[in-house]
Image (cartoon, rainbow, N blue to C red; front, side, top):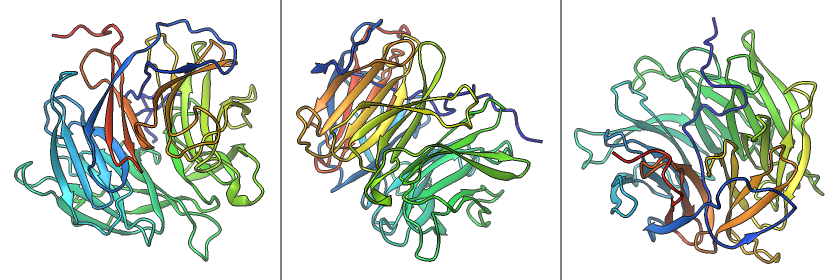
Length: 416
């Protein structure tokens, strides 16, 4: 029997992601902002952890019930201990360095060996052959962590843990970027964690082999049946993959942006959020490394039918990161977006920005959080200071840095 997920329809099962910030605000279309303007204070956590900060995630590394910042660079995985205070010092420590094939490109936290302490899955050898690993701590957090090799997966690019097979335990779901020369698409693969993950083979289930240039994927119970589905962003657009009676079905939700060539079209980033009306929306960056932010609204015919496209902004260069979360406490998710390159369109790059919608999502407004202080390669958001408000962490490519944006709105949760 399939597990009945506790994830609500049209909501991600991952921890609360978020953001927003004060700064230069530009009205793109008429809209109503029902909540107070968010305000953030920016802090540099690390000015140069590596040549490229490929990814960032959050995890309670030291077991103190506080989320720590974990950053992936070309040859290292680093973690920054949460001081549990907005103005405290984030202590930097090394997880691994020069222990995997260069470059490390993606990471996902989970207690893989079931010892009650967080471990990490890691994708490396980018953009070469692609390799998968998982890493677990040594006797002390002051020692380098142990690296376990899971084997190659060509063009490994993004990974997340989710129970898409309905087994009551999450699988490691990996989306490669490019297909091998003899394949029509990438091997989107779910790896099952065995009883003894350090010694046993991780069984692999190929979810789809027909989609290419898959820059990212996401997981949610999209159709409300209690099972976790997969959303993909590729050069073919946006697709919904469902596990039904032991097999995966693939439904095209949108073609994304049209391109002069196949690789210049489709979508690159994808997230799912909820409007104040309770209605779901999808947000994408189009095409891969693209210029446009598009919002999709579900069809009245159901979540597997094509969704209606709405471009809410355009003119960016190398859009590369998305998150959705209720930044301001008004009950609706905002869109957090990051781009990394200069743009010929004024105010559009490099940019960290937040978009807020009116109740039905017909109108969106933009607030610029950071204009050039971080060339965003990846971002994540959650409450890192214990006040109930989500904060933002963004990592840079050309700027090589890690920045924290502390949400300074009135606390939602009283501090102890």
